[in-house]
Length: 98
Image (cartoon, rainbow, N blue to C red; front, side, top):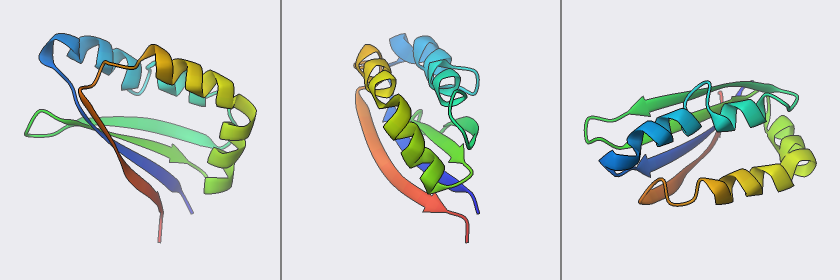
């Protein structure tokens, strides 16, 4: 089973390059996630409407929970650092493969 966490973002054009650098498969988030057990990959997609969707793939929801418990302060620091890149940020949900 795989656990996926989806986020949707609306990003002003002037911030797109920095957003892609932070949220892409080799970006700031992926670098942090790679330090945790069970992390698989990050995918970043651009929608036809210009919005972005990120998919953070983990082996299990337990692995994501362990990441939050062990690296939570670094997660929150990075989140604060990147605050304002997107004009809209929506957590779509957490899903497990069926």
